[in-house]
Amino acid sequence: MNFDIAFEKVLGHEGGLVDHPADPGGLTRYGISQRTYPNEDIRNLTVVRAKDIYRKDFWDKAQCGKMPPAVAYAVFDAAINSGISQSVKFLQRALGVQDDGKVGAQTLAVIDKTDSEALLARFLGHRLAFMTNLGTWPTFGKGWARRIADQLKGV
Image 1 (cartoon, rainbow, N blue to C red):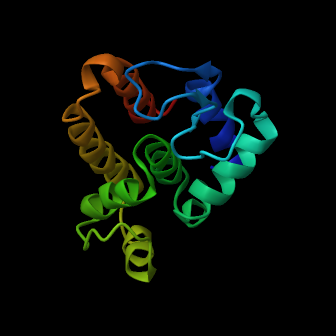
Image 2: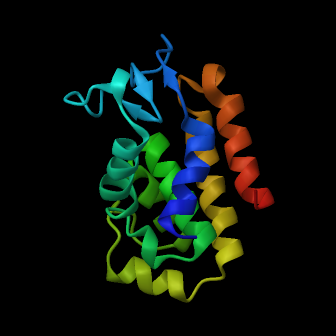
């Protein structure tokens, strides 16, 4: 999966302006939160600007372009919800390597030697277990679980 396809898929989950009182990110548009990007005008954020942020600050930093498509999308999507470091830790735990939250040569080498479908299932298992322990699970958990289920179904 290339970045453009991944971005369009994320917009299907993250589109629109949201200011939910239970969301610790605060005001959010296209999944970009005011808390994480305090210098961005979230209310007037354009899709083009959101795409630039996602490419530079999520896709590229997590090195998703060096991963098999389904795994790349899963890492990208989790980075948006839980941060890059946490997403990479899910990946590293699924791979059985040290979980330092940074994609390096060892992580990439093990990805290349691992069955992508099995890796995706383990990754999503780690992600789901983490999310069910969040205080915001009762409010947002149903949507998060659907997002993970879609990845398992290959949607």
